[in-house]
Image 1 (cartoon, rainbow, N blue to C red):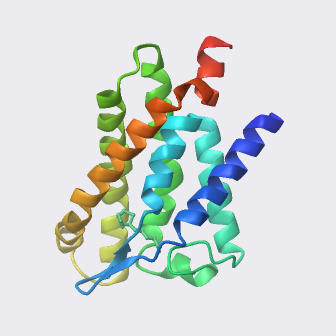
Image 2: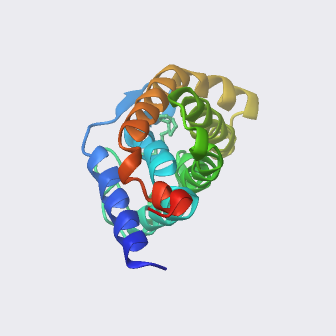
Length: 184
Ligand SMILES: O=C(O)CCCC[C@@H]1SC[C@@H]2NC(=O)N[C@@H]21
């Protein structure tokens, strides 16, 4: 692993932790909050690329598991991993990897709309498809109830997908993907 890769992965893990300082919005009818941290997950994928993004999110999760309160609302520790949001949390490295993988594929013809679509497919839909059924399992409700409840996250998550895409395209010249693809 290159030093630069480690630095970027650590920086993004810290950045996602900083996003967790913004208080979550609890929703009475579903035991998982609205959080800005998914913005960081999508940005990690489309700015860092598959490998570094996945490493960054795994690092973030390990730090949380060790008890550092980096999740929104100042939560951390192993108890988080038996709670209703565990599926969402564990989906983050997968989503970041998929976003990074597809972003690298379209890097040569990069357009904001392409990154928006990628972010929505993996950072919104895939995250929901993993997170909501796990939430349903843990809260002893039906998968259908879990998935339909999770629809509440979609509007906000789509806005985050757009913001992440706009930012990633704006700063593409300093992205590690640029170096990887064009060797600059
Ligand atoms: O802090 C946690 O315990 C994890 C929260 C997971 C929140 C999920 S991620 C996708 C969806 N979008 C949100 O804003 N909240 C949920």
